[in-house]
Amino acid sequence: MGILIGLVVTLGCVLGGFMAMGGHLHVLVQPWEAVVICGAAFGTFLVANPMKTVKDTGKAILEAFKQAVPKEQNYLETLGVLHSLMRELRSKSRSEVEAHIDNPEESAIFQAFPTVLKNHDLMNFICDYCRIIIIGNARSHEIEALMDEEIQTIKSDKMKAYHAMVAVGDGLPALGIVAAVLGVVKAMGALDQSPEILGGLIGAALVGTFLGIFLSYAVVGPVATKIKTVREKNNRLYIIVKQTLLAYMNGALPQVAIEFGRKTISSYERPTIDAVEQSTMNTGTAEKKAA
Image 1 (cartoon, rainbow, N blue to C red):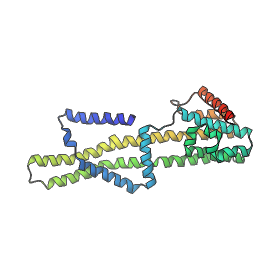
Image 2: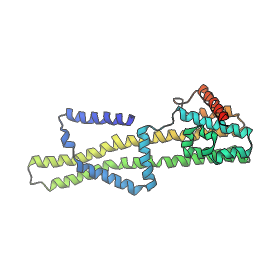
Image 3: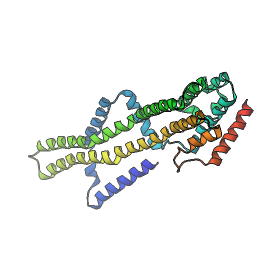
Image 4: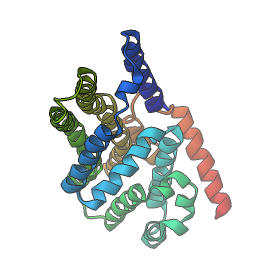
C-alpha cells in the first residue's frame, strides 16, 4: 500500500506540475518510446541474471508491494518454537527430540507454530542446528561461526533480487537516451516537413529521456530499496534463532535464552516480555493437551 500511495503522489506531482506549466499530457503519451526503454531494460535484465534470480525478483516485488515483513506474531512464534524445543532438549531423550526435528511437519511442536512451519527455510535452519546440539560435542563458538556463515549466504541469496533491480534502475537513464536518439534519428528524416511536425517529433524523442530518468529514480530505484528493506527484516528471524540457541548452548535456561533472541528485534517491533511469556505459556498448555 505504501508503494502505491508513493507512486500516486509522485505521478500526481510530476504530471500536475507539468500541466501547471502549461504542458499537455497527450504529448507525453509515446507508447513506442516506452516499448524501446522497457523492452531493452527487461531484455538486459534477462541477459544479466539466471532464471532463478528472475523468478525470485518477481517474488521479491510482490513481497515489497505486500509489505511482507515479520509481524509480532511471527516473532512470538519463532521464539515460541525455540522455547519448546529447548525444553525438549533439556527434559527428553535424544530419540524423542529427533522425532520433532527429523519430521517437523508431523511434530506437535511445529504444528503449534504455523508461521514457522510455513517458512521452510527458517524451519530447516532451526532443525539443522538443533540436530547439531543433540550430537553434543560441538562448541558454541564453532556453531556461531557456522551460523554466521550460513546467515551471510542466505542474505547474499536474498539480496540478488535487490542487486538485479538496482542494475536495471542504473541502466534506465541510458536506455532513455537510446530511445531519445532513435527519436532524433526519426526527426532528422523529416527535416523537409513543417516546423510543427518537426517540433512534435523532437518532443516525442525527448519524452524517451524523461521516461528513462523517471522510471529509474521514481519507480525502479525506490522499489529496489523496498525489496532490500523487506528482505533484511525477514533475515532478522535467523539472527533471533542464532542468538537464542547460542545462549542455550552457553548454559542459559530456555526462559532466559529466548530473551537473548528477543533483544535482537528492532525496538519498534519487539514484543514485550509479558507477550512472550504469555505466548510460551499458552503454547505449552496446548502442547500438553495435544500430547
